[in-house]
Length: 242
Image (tube, rainbow, N blue to C red):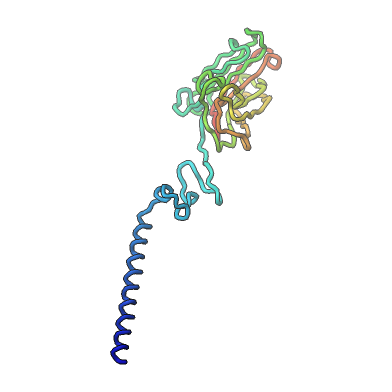
């Protein structure tokens, strides 16, 4: 009996030592593997339980509750005449296009910076349309026949400053989007008519609820001779998406 009891105790002790060694080795290896994994490695391995992308913010995303949404940085259409930050080109002349002249580097009392945009629309009705307007486009002269535009998803408004030379100038519409064709704009929005004053005033176009994923017509104005029988001269500055 004594010999049998001793043998039993030795067997039990051996099993306990084997179990402890096995558990300790397994925990050490697993701990090392988890510590070395990065979020990218989790994503590549398809391990959705180990990496929650909503916990990691990047330059263009922000966490909102349980959803990841795009943040939107200011996107200028015009700041100064030769600013590298400008987007879109005033190339889409419409109506009596010969009656419109645009100076994108006017020094005539800009709202900010050194220059502003000066627009002169005469009453000549050169093409017989009796109205005129200009689109800021990307690329230039793009009427939807080629790819261009910008993804402005996240923008909630377009703001701009405007003033008239004398005051009382009437612009029938300021807008963005609306270009059709093979590659149409994803949406359209605008305000008007707008009566300008001699002093700079800021205006805004509400973009909430609009599809801003593809906009090649970044800004536009239009007016006519019926409301401006003597023509019109007005100024624009600091046009931007926010």
